[in-house]
Amino acid sequence: MKSLVYCTCLFLFHFDCASLLSVRVLKPQPSKTGIEGALLVAPGAYITGEAYEPLGLQIGASCDFRLWVVLLVDFFDNIVNPPQLEGAVTKARQALTDAGFSNSSPVFLAGHSLGGTMVAMYGQKNPDLTGVLLYAAYLTKGNKLKDYPVPVMTLSGDLDGLTRITRVMDTYMELHEDVLSDPTAKFRTPVIVMEGLNHGQFASGTMPPNVATHDLPPDVTNATAYQKIARYTCSFISNTIANNTSSQQVLYEGYNSTGRIMEPLERIKALDTNKDSTSHWTETAQGFVVGLRNKSQILVKGTEVGQVVQFEFLSPKTEVQNSALNIVTYSHITYPFDPFDVTLDPLSPIQIQAKLVTQDRARNAFPAGQYFAGNLTCKDINELSVLAAFRNSSDTARLRYTKRGRRIYLNPDQSIGNTVLWQASEIEIQDLKEGLHVLSKKYSVSFNPQQASSTGLLYCTLLSPFRAMEWIYVDSLRIKS
Image 1 (cartoon, rainbow, N blue to C red):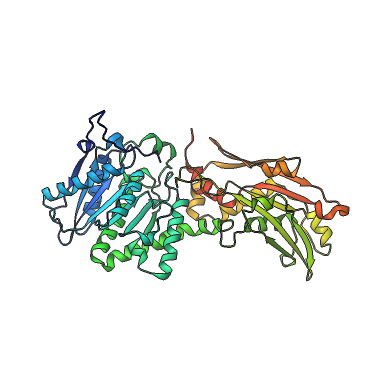
Image 2 (cartoon, one colour):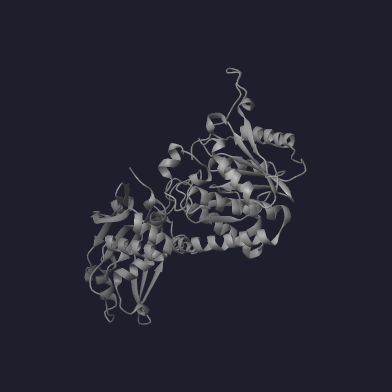
């Protein structure tokens, strides 16, 4: 998302912020009867308000009640900001009244992309709204769904290249936890991901450069996208106003289908981001490196992730207990630094620094075991990471990746001469036109029976399976010039 531009009325320029604002009212069809409501729509950055007219018309036609749709247009530099949004909402309410809308009828406010971020902030301070809809947007970190003052819907597409599915997953998992204690949360604060839609399909026309550069090619037409958005929009508004069963069924279906979309991503993310604060992928990798045929003969235990000061002084351990080989591994995961909760770049771990023991050391400690041949490299482990990500992806994600995704290229390991330099090293990941190039940094020490506790080491900067899966689902599908 672009940096926010606030409209400030300075005497130097004698500039009137409110003078820029205008609205376009789309009246409900005369045949519509029953309950009445209004939906105000704020645009995304550098997208005109008029670009949402096709969606607004589809929403008005799809709702089985009288819904007025008001497009907020003519923002300063085509960016919605808090002072202007407040003025635009006031102007929209007046335009509705002038057109015959009842002042006592419910009013909802929707915002797309950065406009959604501004709408979310507005809704926090203006609980007189009946509800808020976040199109390809989300409540930023620190703002809980269950604490939001009015009903709020989070609605996006799974091919959104700016509002990543991996970020919306966090909001969905928050909702999932809320539903465990309050089943009605799925109706009050629904989080729904629609299959086949991208970021720009909430609007129409030519997208601004930021969207055109980062968005993914959609699987559905704009017309189909508008129908899907309208279906969930109408159901959310209808249920919020009238609490009806038919709307709840649509929202429940959206909740379940989103859960199915999110499940593979959540499962792989949990390998490294979990309540145990342990890299389960490092444990799995250690099992592959040792290569014991009988899996019951090996127990790998990972240590707590993130203790950087201790991590550089620690070395993996091996011992035999109860006729089994016990190994303790150490790992540290580096996550992206994202203080503003922006989702243009990958959200998965940058790397896993893993300290492992080699098969030769395992054979010496546990000679009774039967082993697969060979010692694996860091590159070999990365291949297993990519394979795990691909196999655990949804059928839809695998098909997209196979047909049009840019591939992952794993380069031979770069050897580092000592532990201090390895500790300071970082995996090299380059997103190039032909695909993702990955190069791991390796520190290894051959096994010496005379120095068993300090040799037979394989230290790797590894590709996280979740980073590989995020590439499969999102970044590989982006057309890169």
